[in-house]
Every structure is written in C-alpha cells, then in structure tokens.
Length: 146
Image (cartoon, rainbow, N blue to C red):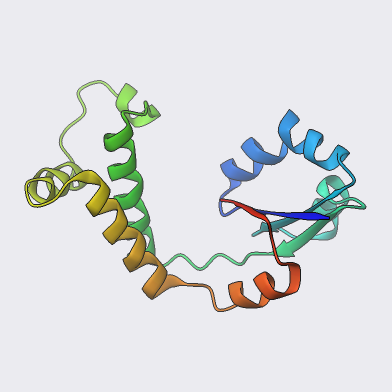
C-alpha cells in the first residue's frame, strides 16, 4: 500500500486541496493510504474528510513572526523565479514592498535558485517540527504533498 502525506497549514489550503476532485479521486483508490495533517482535526473534520483509507493527524499551528517572514521570502522568490501570477500582482498601484527590495539586493549577489535553496535550508534548520520524524517512521510515506 502506498502512503501519501497531505500537509495543510492554512484555511485556504484546506479548502483548495480537500474540496476538489483530486482528493476524491485519491480517496477512491483503496490501495492508497492518505494521511492528512491539518490544524483542524476535530470530529466534524474527521467525519467530513476521513475514511477507511484516510487518516487525519493534527498539525498544530506553530508560525511565529520569524517563521512567517522566512516563509514569505521563500514564496516571493519562488513566484518571481517562476513568473507565476498571484493575486497580489492584480493590485493596482502596487508599491515596492520590503520583499521586493530584499530580492533586488540579494539577486545581485546570487541567482533565484540559490536564494530559494538558502531560504529552505534556514526554514528546515530553525523550524523543523519535532514530530515529523515520528510520523515518517510511523507511516513511511511514498509521497509528501505540501
């Protein structure tokens, strides 16, 4: 049996990932075990999204201000590197923010891939969830969807 981790950390992620056809298709395949990590894991949530092959595990919110800044930096660099359209780009008269200034300064020193790699290493070093090792040993996932 293949095991898939689906890690959710925000309300929009929960809605966008669990309330679409992909999740229904995955649940349909009984040869898959789906482990959903969510900040919401009450009985109503488990009843709505759980199933014979779906396990719901609590993923507590652990985002302090430093975590949010590092996450935002990584997301901003990724969006600029890949030219992905975001809703923030739709704002008219958008002023240069601190992330834009950060990116201009650091991109002169390094390329986007190196910056993103550095941000990811910082994130892993400082903000690794101590329970992640436990869950990897317990379920031995074949795919992690974050």
